[in-house]
Length: 235
Figure (tube, rainbow, N blue to C red):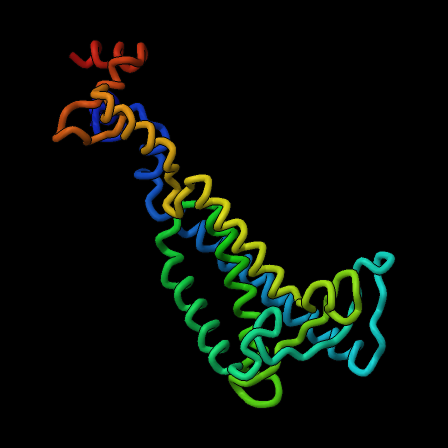
C-alpha cells in the first residue's frame, strides 16, 4: 500500500489516534504492568513494615519521631479506619475482596497512566489490609489489621492510627477523584473536548468530532492549511 493511501485512511493527520491503532496491545500491557507493579510494591512494603512493627513495637512504649509529628505505636484494629465496624471484621474482609476483584476486572479497560497509578495504589492497599484480615489472629476473615503510625499524638487522638496500606488507599482514591473532577477518563479521553464540541453544535457551528453529524465530513480538517494542502495533493 502506498504512503498516500495509508495517510488517507481513518485517523490520517491525527497523530494520537494513528499511534493508538498501530500500537495494538502495547500500551494496554504497559498500563497493566504499571498498575499491578505499583500494587505489588505497596503490598510488599506493607507486609514488611507491619512485620517489623509487630517485632519491634509489641509491648514497647511509643517511639517519638520528627519532634513529635509522628509516633510509632502498635495497635491491632478489628475494624476499618476510624474504628468503624469493629464488630463486623468478616464483612470488611469480603468488601476488600470485592474491591480487589473489581479492580482486576476493570484493569484491561484502562488507557490512562494516571488512572493506572491511582488504581494500583488502591489495589495494593486493599490487598495489604486483606492479608491481615485473612492470616492474622484471631481467625481467618476475622484478623485484626496492624496499625502503627500516629500523627501528633501517640494514642491516635489527633488522627486515627494507620499503616502504609491505608495511606496507599487514601492517596490512590484522592488521585482518582481529582482525575474525575478534571474530566480525565480511564480510557485516556478528556471531557473538556467533548464539552466544547457540544457547545459548537448548540450554536449551529461545525464540530471537530470525527464521524459526527450523520456521517458528514470533518470540516475542521479544511481549516488546517497543512491538511488542506494534503487534500489538494490527493485530489
